[in-house]
Length: 308
Image (cartoon, rainbow, N blue to C red; front, side):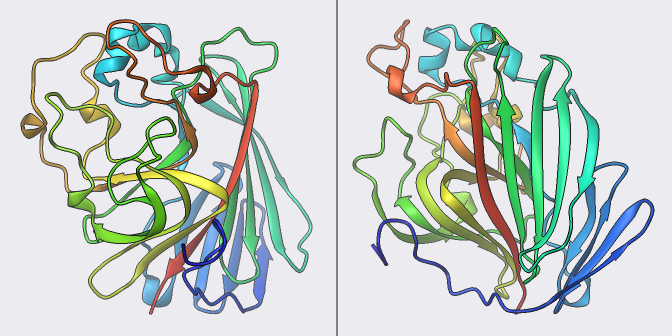
């Protein structure tokens, strides 16, 4: 451990002053070399960039599904939880609220409805004074009779150049909430291509890390992104999307080597993912404490551009 349980940092500089220009349909902001625009009609950051227009990523978006594991198929997860496979796609922006700027930064609240399941979902952005962006995602399932979520988190896609990973959490190998006691908290680094667990007989969910305080994805010059959890987060960074590893409602007889090459980096930043189970592989569910059965979930993390 570097310091305490989770509160070590990667030594990111956090001093600057935020300037904000409000227009009818957008907000323009800048703090030091970091600048960007937020579209008030669509609820998206049009850009978020560092020196010379360096723009490593788009802000993450909601994501609730995982590529089923062999144990998931054994317990019928693709059908019983299948409503979450596309829940992130059908969302409607209901309202955008811009708060007052304070010493902490400028708050922006987005209120959505996940239209396919009639569930409210909110994202609170705080454009921080140092140019970082704090993201808080929340869901409320109260009054809805829905199956548990496979995961509560968000996802973004980075270009292939950001293939150098460093993080502070459990590792170095993949680990899950119900399979992580042999993975110790520490600082680990490696390449994205090496995070894929290729020795499963079929493609499935893999490469996950739990109890993570921060992570960086950078290119060869050290430029990239820095993610810091306000509470511990879980993540995976792979060259394969969840969709490419998901065969659908039944097992597909293919091997990981059969996956179509994809050099993009698919980064999941989660609060939690359902445990992978394994008491047996023909019906047993993950233990109760590793299932996502609460009605309300919320979590926060901070995104910063690493720009040397």
